[in-house]
Image (cartoon, rainbow, N blue to C red; front, top):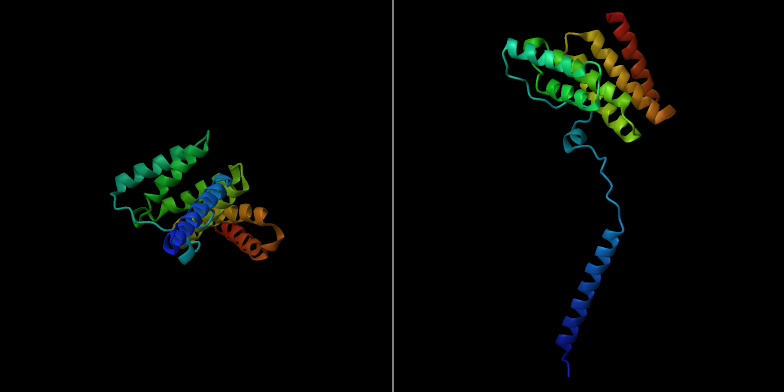
Length: 182
């Protein structure tokens, strides 16, 4: 004959087993969906490019800038352009007047325009906007900075449509500024 304590224990074990089995069934039936949530840094400071200043000599930075342009040259592939972007991130320095920042925006603009999915296009456009904003603030090549910022804003505007009027005004202003500085 069972005691009350063993009956309660049996009930708790049965409930636990049902919970584990039910959770497993729920998980098995679900597909993995990649999260599109931004990194925590972007949530705290949206649209701000995070980087460390490169501590290199002028010759080292010059070689890196050549590598950035070589990686971005025709025929372009996403892998080459992503490598160019990574090299840009490692080459940001006041020594060369932040020249790699607008080239990072250029790489993001190309990736945004040449991605096959809307999610990828949006990801690269948003990254390009942060690179472009940093370029406008830092880079000596102002016309290119405004131009690539506007290109990334255009891709984002095309994806989001008419409900982003503010973005359209910003894009137009950046294109005008690029033309003026040209």
